[in-house]
Image (cartoon, rainbow, N blue to C red; front, side, top):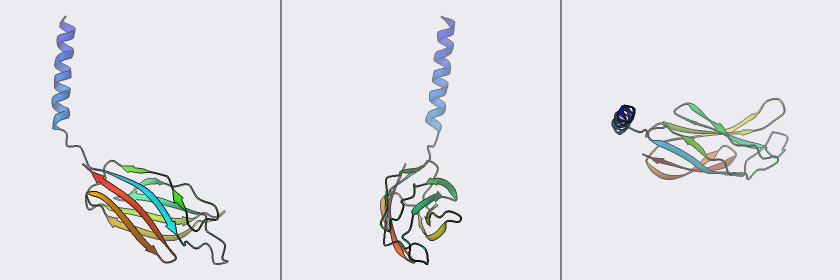
Amino acid sequence: MAVFDHLRLVFLAVLMLASQLDFASAVRLFAIHARDLHGDAAGNPPDPFVKVFCAGIFGGQTEYHKDNANPSWSAVFNFPDCLPNDNLKLEVWDKDLNFDDHLGTCSTKVQYGTNSITCHLSRGVLYYKYELVQ
């Protein structure tokens, strides 16, 4: 019986500690797609993919789409510790055998709510949505 009383006390202590935690904001990035991307200087279509960062922390990258100037990615990225006013950055790349080509970078300051972003690259446009919930 004493064991159960001890477990109850431990459980109550854990609940009290958990109630004092300030759960951080979380950013979810989704609906990433692009239009009119350009490939290499020889005129070949791009094999685009996107790298994502929040507050300088790498969150992963999409798969690449072979020969596609108008890609759409189904990937969803979650940043559990991304805060309001942190920098959300997406880098668009063209996959190559030796060295990937950088097609452009999009950055925005994170704000609460669901946000739709249109980012004009030097050659093409990147669209994405993110939401910051608390």
